Length: 232
Image (cartoon, rainbow, N blue to C red):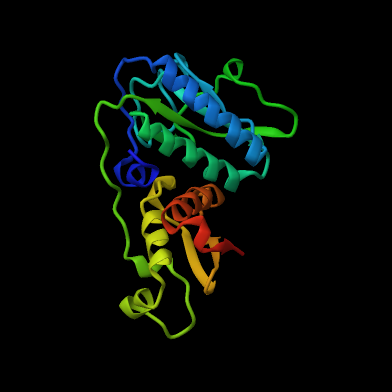
């Protein structure tokens, strides 16, 4: 499975089998985590065989989890939300190619500070549940493509989409498949010129807008091809 195929195949999964992650898969994930931490100046850590974070009752009930004993602790500097989203999704999609399922988790878990390290100036932004899903999940509902594209005043609907180059449309289509907090999808893309793209987080009362933007930008890059554009 390629990363582009993983974008289509991957859905949020909250129920997992009682099955450990194989040693070679753990090794491959840790290799990629090291690269992501180096590039993004983050402190992401893989926690395995640790069921306490998702056990027992929790005040937050959105998305009931079961069988979770592995997760990515998304640790990084305060204010690094977009980088956390971008590199976290890079790891999520790699995990999908390795046969794992996943789910981004902002609230529905209990912190286990003895399982990961948080340095001065850092915080635990969220966690990402990992493992072998009881199911493969289902695709979240999506709005029309034009709602994710910002263009000049007066362009609307199908005409607006048709005017965009194929690589840009492919990028937006992949971004539409990105996981976001409660499926809010509060982001937009704008083609500034032939090879320059702006990506922005829209206002949200729920939060996680910058993190969601980072996730969507990684999807866009994979499908659009980094050789076709630069971010503004």
